[in-house]
Amino acid sequence: MTSVSINPSRLSGRIRTMGQIGALPGGGVCRLAMTDEDKLGRDQFVAWLRELGMSVHIDVIGNIWGIRAGAEDGAPVMMGSHIDSVATGGLYDGVAGVMAGLEVVAALNDAGVTTNKPIAVAAFTNEEGARFAPDMMGSGVHQGALDLGEMLATVATSGDGVLGEEMKRIGYAGDIPPRSMVPAAYLELHVEQGPVLEHEGIRIGAVTGVQGISWTEFTIEGQSNHAGTTPMALRHDAGLVAAQIAAEARQIATDFGPPQVSTVGVLEVSPGLVNVVPLHARLTVDLRNTSEERLVEAETRLAKFADEAAQQERCSITSRKLARFAPVEFDKSIVARVENAARARQMNVRRMPSGAGHDAQMFAPNCPTAMVFVPSAGGLSHNINEHTEEADLAAGTQILLDVTLELAGVKK
Ligand SMILES: [Zn+2]
Image 1 (cartoon, rainbow, N blue to C red):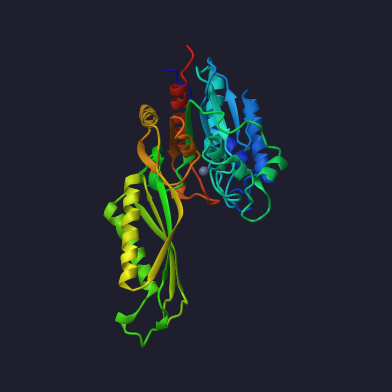
Image 2: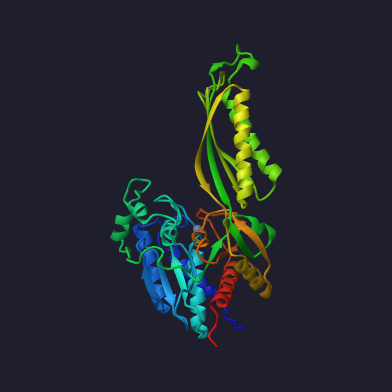
């Protein structure tokens, strides 16, 4: 087995350089998709691809990838992530994965290793969805899950620009059509963006998939009335029903146990006066699970409970799905390779689902796909203080390299 080592300080150097593009005065970055800052980040990425001797490819939604030729032609093993950020982003979200891919190629160049399959390193357009919704737009179009025309016509959330026009303006409208490149395999290193790895003192997360998401909004109509004179039995209290649904959402997560989570992030009553029985209530419930079956079970139980609670209080209730994504399962054999590679390097590793969405989930239906997580200090992300230790990043990048070599094969 060929062993090649990555260079941790070169990797960190590229992350720092990218962190200076769109740098915010207090730390962190703002590189919203298709802005001037995004253009400068893209220019830097393309310069690095060329420096590493890779051919540069740009598609119709502005995704960029470089290819390092292999001994054979055909589909490459692709590593990728994104370099756009939220408005107050950190230095690592997305960038870590793209820079790790560059470091893998740099290390292979240094070692003079030729792989059988080609190797690609990609940066996908608008992963964050911060300036243009939806998120994971570039990888979604690339792999055929999102419609190109619709995405090009997307108007910025703030109203300042249309994605397709902005893409032309910054010079990243390519001509490679969607779905023209399905990789032989897709690997993404990403910072965990949560506290689990740090909390457990584990360096490598072998990501098993992305949990499914279900967002429901409940709207309850009751009757406003005097808080002093209305007997309890005669009330139509919309606020009470909302509170009961919120408590049930929590109870579902308790009864199901991990990985089920539930969150009531919006809870409003009106008129919102201290001495008036609420007329109207609105709440949202966010349910997540890695199993589609369990997620449906949680949704069904909550819907039934909500109807009964409203009926009990003689209120009317309506519900509306705000978002629904089925869980994504990554390729079991690559997940096992990530685990084995970590053990072979004496790094502690655990399997875990991803709590957040990533470009990788767009590839999972079309090619063998997996992810490597590295710890996020304090579990912080989408925060200017987001941080990952150099040693952890280096460890994850080494695993990315080891697994890429296995998947691409080494020319004898
Ligand atoms: Zn990200």
